[in-house]
Length: 364
Image 1 (cartoon, rainbow, N blue to C red):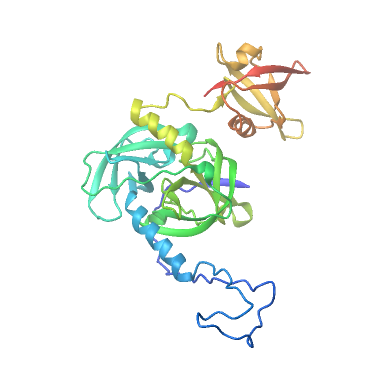
Image 2 (cartoon, rainbow, N blue to C red):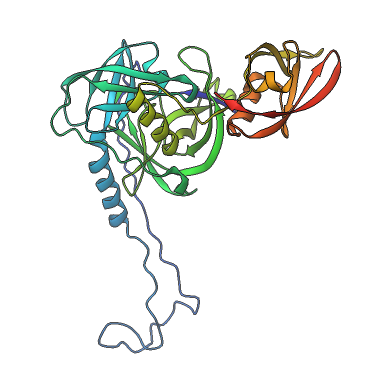
C-alpha cells in the first residue's frame, strides 16, 4: 500500500450535500420478544419482564456530533501558503497554530482564515520539523474570541471509536467528515516527491473518515471534543492510477503533536525528537535481479551509534533487530519503532561476508 500526503487544494469542486441517517437498533431479550398477552402494570411494564437497555437514539448521536462541531470547528483554520491551501489547529490563546510541515513547505509567511470569520489574518513560521511532518506558525495579531483546541491523549484511542475530521479539503473551508478509528500504531512513510517531506511516522491513527487534499494539518476529533490526531496522509491505490484509496487515512497522534509543538513554542526548535537514529546516511542497493536488497552506508556520523558499533561506509545493512532491511524506507520504519538509547542488533554485509553487531541507538 502506498500513501500520499493530502496537503493542498487548488480546484474548487461542486458541493454535493450528503445526509447521513444513523439508525439505532435495539436488541431483543434473550428470553424472547413476544409477550403481547402479559398483563400491563400501572407503570407501563409487563409482569414477568424487565425493560431492555435502549441504545443511543439517532437524535442523541446527531446532537453529540453537533456539539463537537460547534465546540471544535472554530479552532480549525485554513492556511494559505503562496497558491496552496492546507489546514491548521489553534494550539493556544497566544495565536500558535500547529499544522503539517508539508503544508508550510519552504514558506515563512502565511494567510490564515478562521472558521467564524472571513477576515484574512497573517502568520509567520515559528519552526518546521519535517522529520515528524509537523510545524508551528504564529498569528501576527490574535483576534478576539480565538479558541484553542483541546489536545487529547492518543494513548486512549480505541479501534471503532467514532471520529470527525475537520479541515479545508479541496479548499472547502470548515468541512467535516465522519468515520471511525480503523487501527492504531501504524508506521507509515510519506512520499518524498513533490511537496512531501519523506517522513516515516510511527504510531499513526488510521481512520475511515475522508482525508482529502487540504485536510492536512486539520483535526481528527473524538466525540468528547478532544483532538486525537492531525490528519496527514491518505493511502493511494495503484489500481486507481495512484488516486486516493477511499476510507484509508492517517493522522499523527496527539501525544506526538503535543511533544513537538511544546518544544517548538518553548525553545523555537525541536530539542528532543524521541526518535531513534543509527547515525548514517545511506542509499538503497539492488541485487542482480534489480530488486531492493539493502541499504549501503554512504557516511557515518562520528561518535554516532553506527560509528561506535564499528559500522563503516561501504557496509550494506540487511537487518535491524528482527526487521529485514531492503530499502531506506524499511530502515526508517524499523528505527521508528525503536527508542533512543535502546539496544538492538544490526546485520550487514562487508566484503561479501555477513556480520552482526550490537548497537545502542542514538537520537535523531
